Length: 249
Image (cartoon, rainbow, N blue to C red; front, side, top):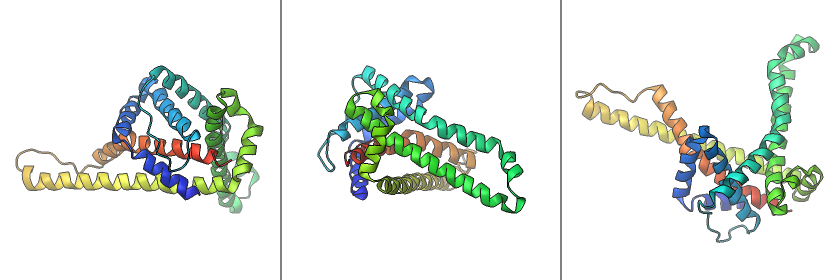
């Protein structure tokens, strides 16, 4: 069922490339704050459609409209993510900034083993945080109440209803898909830069002094692709899949 949900979400996200492009532009302008909340608000709208639909249903991707509602919904979505992330963030920062605490209580010959256990524990903490968020947001939408997103008892009941292992399975596949998309994007950028260099060497090397064979150029271009295309695409997939997972309960 998890694979069906992800397949449906991937298909859904590719319905309109113009939407991805618009989200990408807003994402690029996120440093202005307002566009950031609009991006999150659009994700909220996708999840809303998902909560009220079924897998493989012929549902259109939402248009960009009612910007005020998108902005408000974006604030609500961001608030939920932020509040649930605070504990994991504090623990992670503390662990990174206080390695000497471990050294005082762990024998040196076991230090690396303990660090490995600590990193593993932090990974599982962030996975659990992600699961809470992916249940809290559609639950908030379903109940039409921000307060519902923080009803831990109801969220745990939903997780148990779907199955905690099912959520772990979903997260594992989500990591694989996201990593694959990012890797393929990197490869595409490298191929594109190689083509530019080939054109330069064959045609323009005697006319202009320019080379694209520069690691900084590669990284800047890759970063731009992540902002403009990869993140918007993955956000749509995640927003749709999160709603579908919620509907399993």
